[in-house]
Length: 186
Image (tube, rainbow, N blue to C red; front, side, top):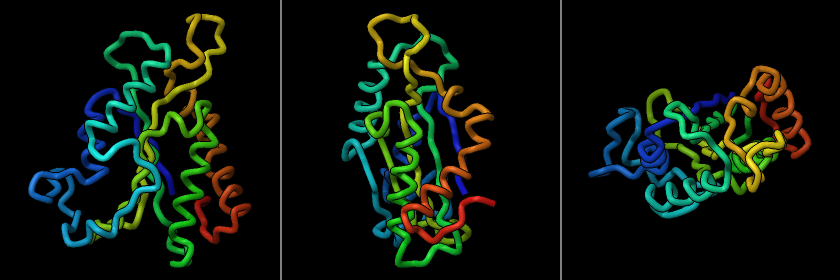
């Protein structure tokens, strides 16, 4: 029910896609986006009104983290949560809000490093309702290195196999405790 993407480049384009900042209202990267359904989309959290403003916030958060100057460094992670078919319609928004809270709870920097949480309901053909949560992959700087930084960039620490193996179990428990009737664990 959830998948993770890592971005080394092209983050502004992904933000534009997620907030539906399109020229002429037409999505160049996804033909399933129905322009007549754009008003059905909503955001749980957004750090600006435009992709440029959101990117500025992302860069500010990244500047608070130690990171090496490498070409292949991951600057942003994105979790996409799909609304389960068994989620009652009256719990849809609660599902996305609790999913957002759960994702924030897994991040050492918490909600502060999240720069976008956008729900899409405008993909007409195959697209199920889903939420994109984008964040700076900040982890605690507990290595004893990089003095002056509380956090460092390390997407791998947040997405290693041992973490991901427990992710859906913990996600399901979070939703159950919040009273959301939706199955995210296969």
